[in-house]
Structures are given as C-alpha cells and as structure tokens.
Length: 410
Figure (cartoon, rainbow, N blue to C red):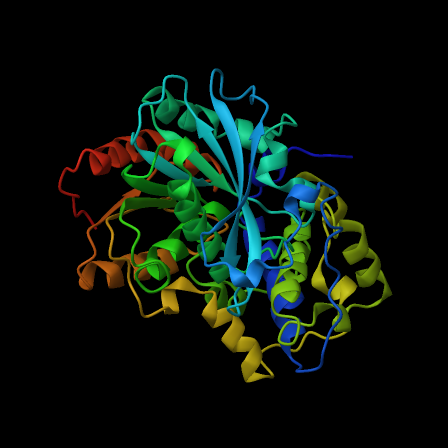
C-alpha cells in the first residue's frame, strides 16, 4: 500500500522525536565498527542514459556527459524539458555521473534568471529520481509546483537536480552539495539553454534545504567561479549529531525514513557506516524490502517500526569514525560560512528538525557577516512550513536577481 507523504507528517507532533530516536539507533549505533560492510545498492537505472561512462574520470566537475530532450511535463504547462547528465564528485572526491532536469518556460529570453531547486528526495531507488517522478504524477512534487510555476511565469529557468546521486545515498550532505553546484555549472555550459550569463539562485526545503545549504557553504571552495545571487533554505536539519544524541529508540509511524537514511549512509560511507553488519534477520528483510523504494513506499513498509526490532546492538559513539561521519554532515558544526546572501525559514516548533541547531547556525552566520534574513512561520508542522514560507521566499529571490542589496534580518 502506498500512503501519501503528508499522512505521516501532518499529525503526532511529538512523534518526530521518536522517529529521530530511531535514526539514532538505526544510523549511529551502526557506526561502531571499522569492519567492511556490504551495502545493498539500488538496482541500476535500466535507461542507459543514466549509466556512468567509462571515461568519467577524464572529465572535470560540471562537464556535460549527455543531453536528452524530454517530453512536456503536465505540472509545467508550455515549458520545454531537457535532461542533462554531467560529471560530479562523491563525498570522497571520486568522479560520478549525475543528472539534472531543466525546465525552460515558453518564450524564454536568453540569460533570464536560473533557479536551482532542490526537491526533497527521501528515497532509495533509481526510479525515484526527480527526473522520473516529474512524469508519474508524484504528489510530493505536485505540492511544490505552484512555487515553481510562479518563477516559470516570470520567465525563469528551473533546474531540478537528482541530488542523492547515482547510488541514492540518502543523508550524504556533501554529495548533494557537489551535485547541486555541478548541475549549475553544466546547465550554464549548455548553449541551447541560453542561461550562460543568467543570474543564479538556489532554493530547497527539508532534505532539499539540506542539499541547498551545504551547496551554499561549499561553493567558495568547490565552485568558486560560480556567481550565485543567493540561496533560500527551509526546514533544514542543521545538526544530525544533536538530533541523534537527544533521542531514544521508540517506535514511530515514519521509522522507514530512519531506516532509509541508515541504508543511504552505508552506500556513501560503507567502512564507517556498515549498516548491514548490524541488522538481525528481520532487519535484513526490511532493508531488502525498501532498498529500491520511493518515499511513500518506504514510509508504508517501515510504519511503526523501531531500531530495537531490527538491529543487534544499541551501542553508539563507540568509535571516533562514527562520530566524525555525523559531524561531517552537520552544518552547525561546519566552520565555513556562505559567501552569498541567504534566506532561512522554519517553524518555531518544528517537531522534526531541532530549532536550536537552526538558530545557532543562523547566529554564527550573522556574527560572521553573512547577509542573512530569517523568518519563522506560524505553523507547528514540518511540511506545512514549506508552503507557508513560499511567498516571502519568492519575493526574496526576485530581489536577488534584480541586484537589490540583500537584507539582514536575523
């Protein structure tokens, strides 16, 4: 049975503490070893377009590897769609192939603004890529269509990267940042898209906010030549370490997302996060059942589970390597700051993402001179805050591409 994403996130506010407790046991407890694990990677995409070319290492980050004209997307009437494959970099510096879907509005004018929009992708299977889901009537994408249509109607181009990478490594923040930045590079290098000199902005919420925020802080070191006018991030998990340390192991209807994160981290960090070594037989069966699934299926399969049911140990932080991986993917602990203007919004009582970590990050950025505007929205639930903040986000993005001085309000 497939359940709507919002059916899990629209109720039981206190339950978010429990699902993050499951993350603690399921992801961090599995880090207490240096043995080599055998991750269960997704089934390769059957479409040869997505395959990694044998000479990928000979290319530079952002180099275009292939281009395909795609059919129209019903969510975006009148727009043309182009799928771009490009060279990017994984969390360890290795070359990978990644993809981004470019939506070009009808009547597009050369060098009109470009928005890189990072959709929240909480999935493990290759058919869950945004570039596929745009054609399946996915409810989660439909929820963001109004905001994207607003910028398309203004003549902007929208790029939507598949930011979890070819192995769908859910939770690997550095990987997502590299793909976002290399996707912008690739889109700007493709002449037929006519965005070579376009002003660029980025935006994303929740998991998409995670990829966007990390892209903003890594841009000075990873893609210093890119000129990005600003980035808007909402509901972003700023500190996975804080989230994990404060939580227990109670069951929760959205436990599947915690399990999926453990699987995704193992795919990107198999030596430090050997999830599979710590699963009991029930855990192995659960892993296998969700290893190629998308968000709604993962939620349904893992509903009301807990780490105690599926792992053979509850020990956490026994190895320094384990803590290091979580710290490396926790933005609050990253010493660098964005060099571009930032807009950050969240619910003041978000039951999923610890607000204290968001506020600490905002404060550190402000003290470091980042031109940051923050906003709290008057909704108590995680996903609803995305829509509640959208109108102000759009106004802020428009100001950045017009070249107006970025406000500081934090």
